[in-house]
Image (cartoon, rainbow, N blue to C red; front, side, top):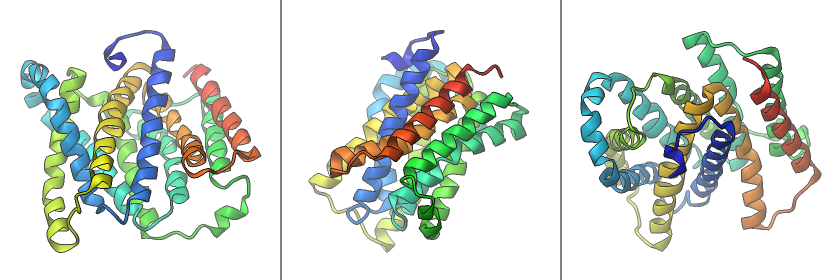
Length: 300
C-alpha cells in the first residue's frame, strides 16, 4: 500500500494528501445528503466501528509489537483519538443537520490558518513571507469557489448553531494535525487501529444516548452503503494517506491541501447533481494551485 512506503519524493506526499482530501470532501456531501436518514452520532459511531473492525486484523501483529510504546505514550494517543476521530466527525455530522454544505466548506477553509497559528503557539514554528502569501492565496481561491465569485453571497450567509459546530470541528482537527508530530514511533496500522478503536469507545455512550432518547438507526440499503463508504474511504484510506503526508512534509504544508475541499466538493456536485462549471471555479482553482505551489516551494 503506498501509504506505508517511505519516499523522499515530495510528490508522493502531495498525491496522498490530495487523495485524502478527495474522500473527505465526499464525506461532507454524504453527511449532508443523508441527514434525514441517519442520526449524526450514529453515523460517526458506525463509521469508526466499521473502520476499527476492518483494520484490527491486519494491525494486530503490529499492536503487539508496539504495545510497550503505546502504554508509555497513552496520554498523547488519547488526545489524538479524541480530537481527530471522536470529536471532529461527530461535530461535522451534527453541524450538517443544521447548516448547508457551502457553510461547512467555508468553515473548512479556515483549518490551515488554525494549523499555522497552533504550530506557532505550541511549537514556535514560523512561516516565511512567501509561505504566508501562499496561504492567503489559497484562502482567497477557496472562498471564491464557495461564494461563486460573488462577494454578496458572504453577506447572505446566515450563521446558525450548525456553523458553530463545524467551527469547533475545524479547531479540533487542526489540533490533531499539529499534535501528530508528538505521536510515538508506531507502525501506521498500529496508530490507526488504536485511534479508531479508542474513538469508537469514546462515542459509544453518546451513541446509546442518541438511540434511546432521540432516534435509532433505521437499517436499510442506504444506511448500510453509507456506513461502508464512511468506514472505508474517508476513514481508513484517508487517515493513512493524511498521516503519512504530514510525516513527509509537515503539518503546515500538509494543511494547505485542505483548501482543495471546496474544489473537490464543487466538482462532485457537478458530477452527481448535474451542476455546471463556471468561471469562478477556474479562478478559484488557479488561486488554490498557485498558493499551494508558492507555499511548498518557499524556504521555511
